[in-house]
Length: 314
Image (cartoon, rainbow, N blue to C red; front, side, top):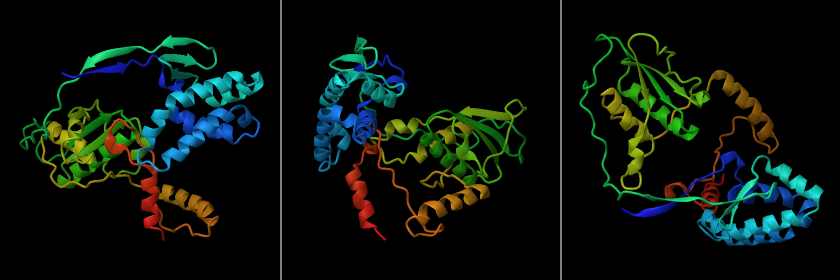
């Protein structure tokens, strides 16, 4: 089995100033301040050099990672050299994020504490061949309600909002494939996503006959080997958990807008679009060019996003 050195994070996430946060938020704020920018000329010049290099690359996150040690070192140097009152102004911009990683240490920018980075060696198994979880035979799960009555099901999941949007796809496809056979309710950490969703019925887990499941997505572990869309991950799990076949699937999440939300949106669009001479009913796209690097499929450069926008201009 291959071994990898894994950093054991000793800092809560809200205390850690990542290189991405430093590059995208803190340094631009300092640059826009005519007083502070003079104290941080050296690190701002390095950031400008990284900007110039990133423009011609398809993997901006990779380029930033390469320059991270130099940017962090220069930021610490400029911070410690600045007058005390300007140090305080910069630290105020950091909020709780006062720890950085530098030269094999955790460094606290406020207290000057230093701790060695702690690594562990862990073994990882060889990659498994691509395969779908077995599709169960319909009716293999013991029915908990009399025939002819809908099953009452509560699904729980407390992962990130993006994951919950994928769960909405599974709930929708369950009802589309088995209309009238289920009443579904959810418990998630992003309940606003479900507001207005007509597939949701308020259920009480304490009532007899109510089934409760924790939603999982084992198919995600095959995403680098097989041709599966993320929306299918919860759906495949649901087939197994409920003992049904969900064959007709839509490759997108399901979020419904309530009438009052439509009204709020029109009010906001009237204000926003009016500045550019457009009416509130103008059709538009929102493009999010950010990414996470835990899966390479999530990484696409801002340059490519811009090429798509330019191609469809008008």
